[in-house]
Image 1 (tube, rainbow, N blue to C red):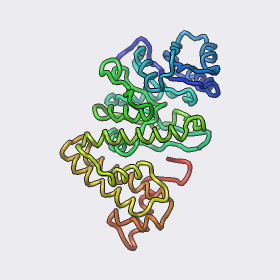
Image 2: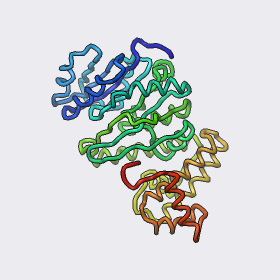
Image 3: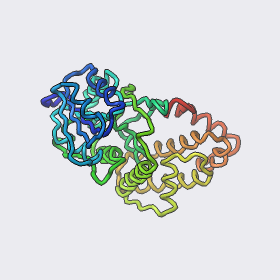
Image 4: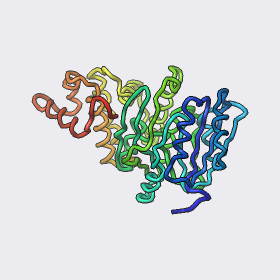
Length: 338
């Protein structure tokens, strides 16, 4: 293990987070590993955010106060200029890290020296109550990202050399979905992973998402998918783009034709990957099909699934068996897991 001046550099951007910030900071200071620095960039908060931070009187905190609002992406890049840790961890001002988060993530990275960036399983709480079940090998996770992000951003932990030697930074043209872009770029060059334990409590609340920000998030996620398709030398037409976005968002009450159009993308992706070799072919095929079937199951409409089942080449009496097998394979519950 390559050593830094501290074991873990924690980077955080805050803006008017007074309501939940103390819980978040307390969860960092309660870690079983105490060899860390906490680099916080405040984005011109107008509430008690800065006061709460200053009240900790802990010399492991480095507080940087912006003179103008710069946004999350630029703030994270600012924080990354100061990191001195062997490992770098992300944290948000409204989430809570479980006490063994750093310890278990570092152990996971030491056990898997091929990994450069990881996250963890999460428990979403507040306005929702869900537990992440995303797992997979590095090749499987990379393939999944062609459709949607797989690494929870506040749970990121990466090796310091990814920043200090490889020069990775967040793309500042993304004000949202910057984590999806970052992880996709890292995964093209290095292996990524997810720890098997739930190590982060991810708070869901109304302040997080406005309709405007939600639309921006969706558009930027689509940009990341387009970037990955460019790597495959694929340019989709409008109908294909609509099919991909409907699939990526797992639109509920989708029509059978939506599933069929999404299914037509799979052979296109596989054919181009044979030429470009961006993804592991076997894992790409398996994960794309799994994600398509998963969307069908999550529609909770057996009738729709039966109508669309032709996309899988299954018909008649085998439909029910297929659905039962898929449900068992994905271990998907209608509530409580995602």
